[in-house]
Image (cartoon, rainbow, N blue to C red; front, top):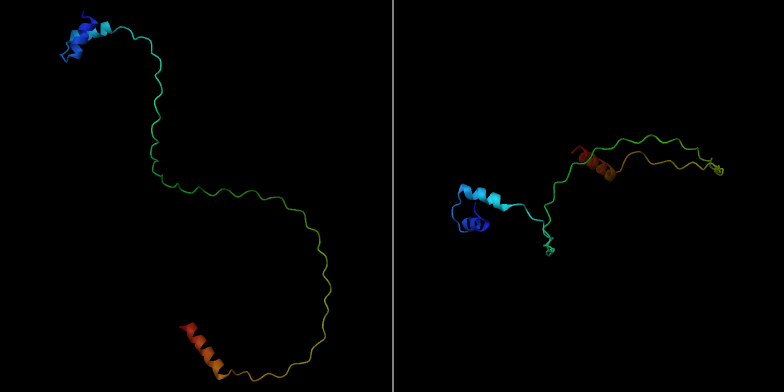
Length: 118
């Protein structure tokens, strides 16, 4: 069986190891030693860029209507208003003019009807 230094010479120099070299390496490697102490903490890295904005979600469904609340107590009766005074009957008005429109009023009515029909 090869020694640790002999195996190191084979693998470090770039020589082509043989099958026996691998078997010897496994036998010589032995057990793993205890873990060493943790090293000092390195400096913090720079902040990364913000990720892309995700798509907006669909709106949620409407909730159910709440239960009908209890009927409230009736309110107090309001005060009665003051009694109004009925006035005296007035004199009759003068007779009106005949019911025909003036020419200007007639032309205005015709224009409005044509605007509505058009």
